[in-house]
Image (cartoon, rainbow, N blue to C red; front, side, top):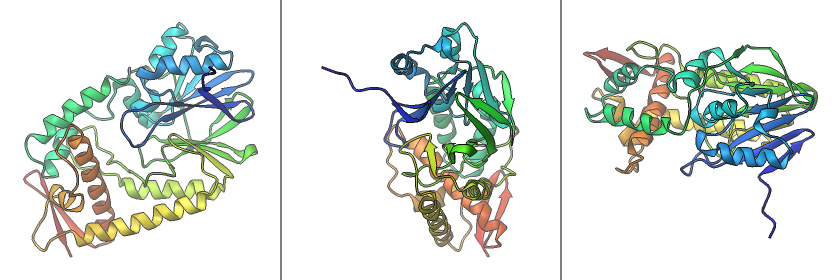
Length: 333
């Protein structure tokens, strides 16, 4: 019986390898192997799927020792988590490249100290038990990745040799501070990481600070500025960090913008006349989040969604956000 191949050639010299990831969303993570005079691996999957990645590379007649460079689209564990084991297998003869603003995530497993996360959650009005649960869950997730020193920083506009192809680094903050896409101009192709996914509406997480305080940057606004940048490139195809390739970018972006407008309206209509906390608005907006093992993460995503939309609504003069006694209060104008 012939086993199905783990790798698939998606364009000359570029192979996609889909690696499993727990949970329904966002689904398996896509790693890409660029083969030419040099070999580049774009994203790695988690540390738990390194063996499967190695088997897939074996189909191509390659081993980890053949890899010259690993490029990480952003500092989430499903995209960098296997880098250390891969480098160990090659006796560290591989260059690991990431954007500067996501280096901390790759090297330390978290973009901010636990104290910053705890402060943020408290200001959102969550129950006292919630921050410790979230921190504990982060430790569980951390077991899916091995932190790894970054060897080189990629910058906006930088050209990278990717096997037979040349890619331009395009900064696309929003999903994370340091998210990047890679643009193969001659091919009309973008590798979008988690910036654009066909099957999921955007998740622009709060850009927490290194110190206890509310985020100064507005994730949703930066995300849609980044969407405009990719739209302006007018690529024929996007190869994504999860799910299928995208051939009709216009329809996906239209879906994103409609979802954003609809969510803005829902958040605004969910605010009661009296002052509200972000947590109570999130519970009202997402009543079906179940009290199970996934509750802390699902609730954090809901709080993040509400908070980042409130940042935009405040910018537009629709709401007032007032921090009083370490709790953020929300009022409609």
